[in-house]
Image (tube, rainbow, N blue to C red; front, top):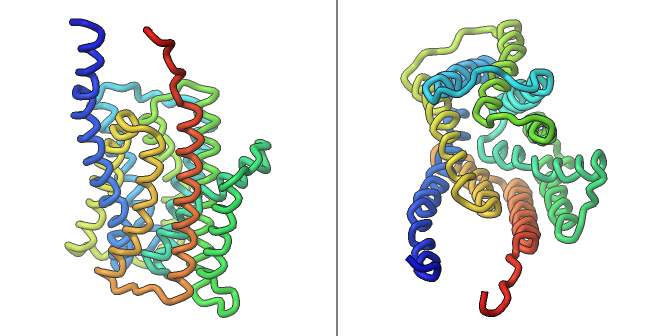
Length: 316
C-alpha cells in the first residue's frame, strides 16, 4: 500500500472513534447537566452533608472496584498532595455545592459553580505570574458582572446559597492547581488519582456529616434512584466517558462541551423543578455563560495557533 493511499484511508479509520466520542460527549453533557436536578431532588430526603458523604463514599468504592477489575495498581502516588486534592475537591467542593443546593436553586447553583475557570485564571495570574491576555480580560469582566447580578447585593436575596456555590467553584479551581502540580511532579494514573482523592477527601466529610446530622435519610424510591444516578452515572459512567472523550477528541472540543453543563442544568431545573430565573438571575447567568464561551474561544484559538502544522516542502 502506497503512502498516498494510507493518507486517504486514515481519516476514514479515525472517523469511527471520533463519531463515538461525539456521541459520548453529548451523553456526558446530558448526564452531568441533569445531575443538578437529581441532587436537588435527593436533598428533599437527606441533609446536604449527609448526602454529599454518602455519594462520595459509594463513588469512591465504585472507582476502587473499577481499578481492581481493570487490574490497575491500588497503590496511591504523591500521598500528601493527593490528601490536599481530596480536601479541596471532595470535602470542599462537593460539600459546599451540596450545601448551596440545599437552600438555592439547581440552575443558579450550576452556573455559579462554573465560575471555576475564572478563579483559575486569577489564581494563575497572582500565584504563577501568568498574565491575563486579550479576551481573557473580557471573560473575567463578564463573569464578574454576572456574579454581581446573581448575588444581587442591593437586595441580598439568596446570597448565602450563592456564596456557597461560588466557594465551591473556588475550591474546584484550587483543586485544579493542585492536580496540575501532581501531574507535573509525579507520573500518576488519572483514574487511580481520582479514586484516592475521593476516598481520602470523604473522611472529613463523613465526620462533619455525623457531627451535624439531625435526622436520618428517608429511604424512598426517589432517594435511592437519585443516589444510584449520582454514583453509577454522574460519577461512574460519566468518568469513563470523560476519559474516552479526552483521548479521542481535541482539548478545545472537550472544553466547549463543559459549557453545556450549566446551561442544561438551568434548562432541566426550569422544566422539572419549575425554577424560572428572575430578570437579574437570568442576566447574571447569561453573562457568566457568555464569559465561558469567550474564554473557550480564546483557548481554542491559542491551541490552534500552537498546534498549526509546519507546511511540508513542495514535493514532500
